[in-house]
Image (cartoon, rainbow, N blue to C red; front, side, top):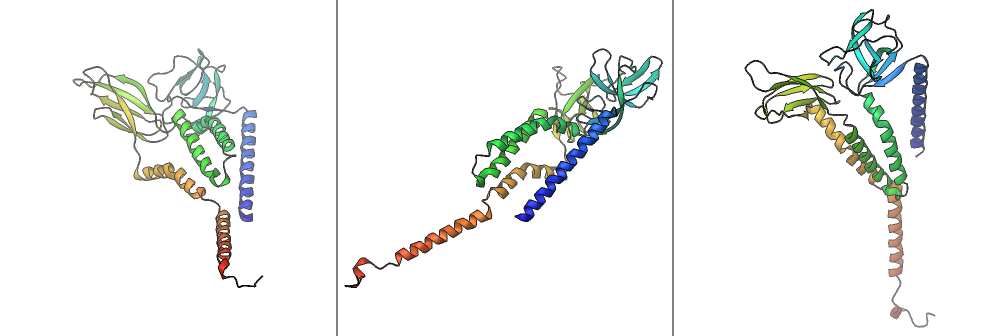
Length: 306
């Protein structure tokens, strides 16, 4: 027990120190003019897929070159975009998203330029968006299970945590996503349309044509083209996405799915001390019963024994 408390204290201290380091680093980055943003649209393709967190440093038009990725405010709407610089002249920067077919219909000057992208972390943006919901849900689970008897408390907590994580995943859809970018006419002499799609989830998928043969394997942020023919007679084309994992990926996913059950079984048993205490109580009761049964019947007591 003492060793467990020591390890708990060490791990808690390490977690607090790590959190303080992150807060200090983030504060220094912010004071130095750095900014961070979460990518929510697929316009940058595999360079900055949906769910990425990107870091920017202050920059100017003069210090920016074609090929740089910059964050700026749309001169027309004020919405923040992150696109690649394709050209530069006296009027400002011309930008375009890697997944977009045409350049943006505006020029970026120093007034709109937020900064130049210097780094990104794929998938962290999903965690940033999920963290407030997870903390709220976990806090409610923790409070609700304080009144559950100790031997069943952790089982109920595992169940509650699993439910919270499932609901957050259902709300955000971070793992699988498919977005239509546009469509074009098919090759000459063929029916249907050619549709461009992009994956917006963390896991690899296979984009497929419903009731048709077209299919494409896509990673996060990757663009694929599907020649859709099923539905040409009615002018409507349906596509869907399915997971496209290797056998290792399927094994890992199965382990993730059953881990709450395994953890519940592991922590659901009463502590060893409680089980030993129950056994001792049973043994004591049995001994007491044996003493009572050993008393001689009243009709066998010798005369004059009183």
